[in-house]
Amino acid sequence: MMSIVLIGFMGAGKTTVAQTLAKTYSLDFADTDLQLGRQFAQPAGDLLRRVGEDQFREYEYQVMQQMLADATPIIATGGGIIESPASRVLLQQEKKVIWLNVDYQTCWSRIAGDQTRPLATKLSSSELQERFKVRQKYYRQVADLEISATKKSPQQLAQEIWRLTNIRD
Ligand code: S3P
Image (cartoon, rainbow, N blue to C red; front, side, top):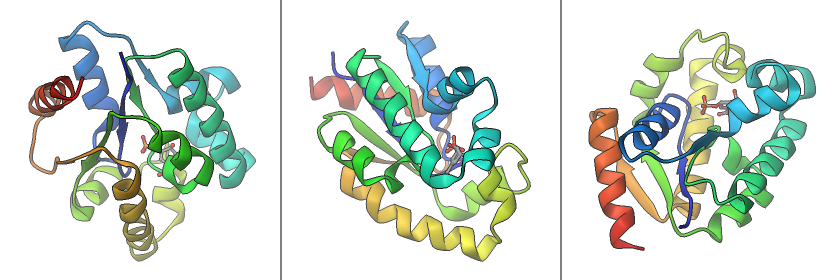
């Protein structure tokens, strides 16, 4: 079975939806941020602060590559993973990359002031919105499926993703 890989901006709900999918359909799930946290024995946000964005993207790439090699059924990624060209190449080879597309205001309302997300505290709202814009084109570029996720519950999204990805098996 090909991995279902969830991509999208911070606050789109990738981790929650991945957990819901895993629980509902009894599948293993992995999250690049959680895995980095385990590997480096510090939360992903602290790792990002310590090593900087470029190095973080490299680690993120390696972690995702391993998860795909292990055929992990459900993979949640960090919102910035698509800023790495190497990660984009890897994602483009996959067949079940799901973009949870949530509007900027909703993402912002979920992440503003979140100390565990360095970019959400370091960047101003307008800088972050600029990142959002730049990233939209990368999400679109690597996604096999785009799902409008703004007003849907994790359960609804999990069902929708499951239905759509099984059709493509
Ligand atoms: C990041 C998103 C975070 C985390 C790190 C960087 C980003 O993950 O990987 O703080 O650059 O968008 P979430 O998308 O789960 O918040």
